[in-house]
Image (cartoon, rainbow, N blue to C red; front, side, top):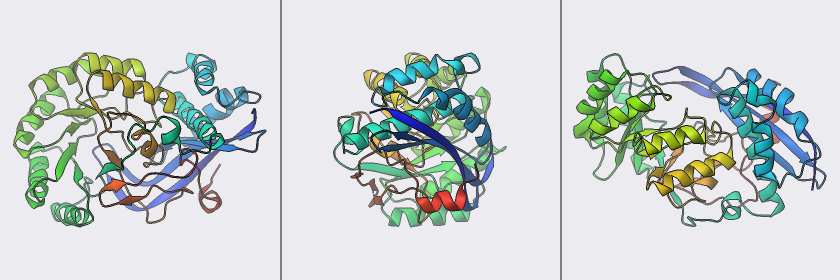
Amino acid sequence: MRIDRAESFILEVPIGGVIADSMQSVTKLEFVGLTVHTDAGIVGTGYTVTVGFGGSVIRNVLDTLYIPELPGKDPCHVKDIWRQLYYGKAHWIGRAGATTMAQSAVDIALWDIVAKAAEQPLWQLLGGARPAEVPIYNTHAGWLNYSVEQLVEEAAKLVDQGYPALKVKVGLADTHEDLRRLEAVRQSLPEGILLMADANQTWDLMQARKAARLFGGLGLSWLEEPLHPDDIKAHRLLSAGSAVPIALGEHVYTTHAFRDYIESNAVDVVQVDVCRVGGITPWLEVAALAHAANLRICPHAGDLMQVHQHLVKAIPNSWMLEVIPLWDRGPFRHQVRLAEGKALNPVEPGASSEFTAEAFERFRVA
């Protein structure tokens, strides 16, 4: 089997409202990716996601640095292609950010082809370490632009739907107001429901230490992205004195950085994102590093759960799958299926990364 051609795309998909964290407000998502066509008639789809801007930069990387290198290659040689692209033209202009996100899309598309050729869902192709359905946690009820009343109301709805864990955004100028919002949600939750908080990098070390101290009595499962994602030392110092476990990874772009975080005892829950770390190939390497250090994987839902629903089933150290159900009917052909607090097992061959024809017709802008 050989690659015939590949074509890039951008889909701009409105989310039907406004959601906000401490970094930005979002009204639409950009799905930037490519379809890879083979001489066997199998087509693979890969993508990455932005919060509504920057997609043209990623698409330009695909069109000028990666796609021209693909024709004639055997798509089953995924890891060799990953290495060639990484040390090719893109290596000289960036080993993180847009170049890595574009490489994520290529790698996902190739693994999609391999799984389809094997007529297996990706998680089975990768070994099926967790055949049972994986528990999920919901972030959608905890946005920073929600009032306290909305937070409590949405939390109650999700508990009734069977969610075993919820996450609330923090990072306001007044950390005591963050505490008030978290306390209201915690007090409304039945016993046994897990609660997490996500600061989205907004604090310096002093404020992060204050927040960890204030939140210490809430029984949080973790405090997410409290500091700048490149500052491993500050995370180590915070983690050493925090009663709340520290989670991070959605803005960490390399296996080397994850290794350094893990070896520095600066992270407790690893949230590696397949759409930002360079794809499935390095994602599995990070998961193995975490497993060797006895750490859990809870991937960031940058892929809107489609690919991660396979990956958390392919490793032994996954904990929960983050879900952000923005649409009743999403843009993917085989949308992730959720029920009773779990992600149901994907059964269709591939990586669940393929979009519907309707989504391409309605939302494609490039």
